[in-house]
Amino acid sequence: MEKERIVIIGGGFAGLNLAKHLDPSKFEISLVDRNNFHCFPPLFYQIASSGLVSANICFPFRKEFKKLKNTSYHMGHVKQIDLEAKTVHTSYETLPYDRLVIAAGSTNNYFGMDNLGEETFGIKTVAQAANTRDEILDRLERGAMCKDKERRRQLLSFLVVGGGPSGVEIAGAIGEMKKYILKKEYPELEQDDVTVTLIEGAPTLLGAMSRKSRDKAKKDLENLMVNVRLNTALKSYQDKYVTFADGHKEYYETLIWTAGVKGEPMPGIPAESIGRGNRIIVDEYNRVKGCKDVMAIGDIALMQCEDYPNGHPQMAQPAIQQAANLAHNLNHGAFTRSFKYNDKGSMATIGKNRAVADIKGFSFSGFFAWLTWLFIHLISILGMRNKLSVMVNWFWNYIFYSTSLRLLLRPTKFPLRKHWGD
Image (tube, helix red, strand yellow):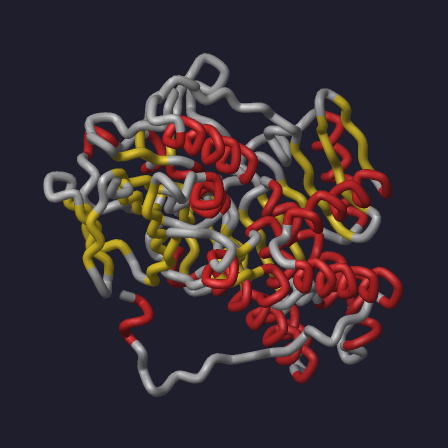
């Protein structure tokens, strides 16, 4: 019998796990992604802070698919989904499908302040994290040469917007650099020259975690010389000046945005199928509302239920679990098992020996939480070589607070390759 053709858009936690769980004897599987690798977003902040290099947390799709039958990788951006013709048009080809699964993930949400996409730095992708690392190192090097104390302080002013796990982790990493790295590697600079500020519009950091974890995270950040401002919202950012919601302005040379995400735009999906946060509305089986033979999983899927009226958290675990559940239904040829999210807990690390964790109703912090965080993230990385590289880097940094990865790698400008961004 001719196999059903399943096209999966996106190779993140949701898309890759779906491809690995589908029965290759029943399906011809094609995975489309703009990058030719799967990456591990929870450690993007370590790329941005020079703790790891991109290759440590990325794994080529083609190498992973060597183990899988009837599974192929296709590089490209999705330009249009034709629901009537059942085709996906990418920047390079047209792929027919019998069933389509959208697992494209999420992108930065600037809440209407569209200029922030060009004027701020982020850690939502590997490329953004690497660019943020270069910016931080560039400012440190320029600050070390600057003789004007006021200008030096301007150069070394960092603002992190967003008090979720990503914001807390990158702010803590820069705080560690300020407290422990400056005196060792940048003797020209003083700690007072560097300003690290984290702002959050809500009354607490890490809103999804317990009160104990939130308070501990704030205390740990302050111990790392990070200025934490709660109930503080950003209104605009122009010419390096931040205007806050209360009207006052402050100068920040580098603004790192972690304040929100929204679903990746999917041209061809009807407007009535798009819900809150640009996410695609799905039922309890991850089938897209109003679209035949189309499903969505992971960050881009909006499944509203009694426990999660605004949809499930846009994190790795819901994506992985949705992929496994959808694969089960597709492999059995019927949508009989609805999705139920098993919340395994939340974690965030603030620096060396500093982390907070909420697991199955139990909250803990400090060294044990940090070790737990290390172990869970290490075993989740694809590839034994990557696991070993990450473990060696973490061990070295732990012992010596030093790394050979603080390399400023400016990309070359020419020749222009516009098709890379198609």
